[in-house]
Image (cartoon, rainbow, N blue to C red):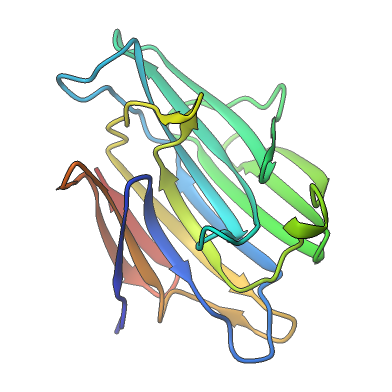
Length: 218
């Protein structure tokens, strides 16, 4: 059973939990997915298309901080695909160097708030056994975490102030979705669904399959 309500967004598709139970805060979020092969949709403008698949704490409202880690997918209009792992405590963005992956690899991402101003993000390629992690500090005192939401998202990311042409990412299935507070772990039972909608057209279809798994279809 899923009592989800849907949020339409120009740049997010996926699921979020907001808020945690009264008096609790989310301090750990994890999810995993198989790396898709993106393509540029017919009629796409520019030399390339992109999307980002990520897991995060907070950030589901414009005034909130956001700690996240993910994989960016970029594909040229000739079909050349590149993947990069990254972390961000908005607005501080940083790639992970020397993290190898290819289409079909199983990726696990976790984001942990050690304190409201310190976080640890970990990106693991389950298929190769490689794992990278990084400790991050809040950019400033206005960006400390409040632990009021957890997200699993495919995003049309921004570059130079505008959204990149959105890649057809096929289907991303998030599994092992969990968000923990100090005392308990929550799943997708009461999650919000985010559908990506541009120029009045829904570009995604999100389906929650179980308390720990959901799919985002282009």
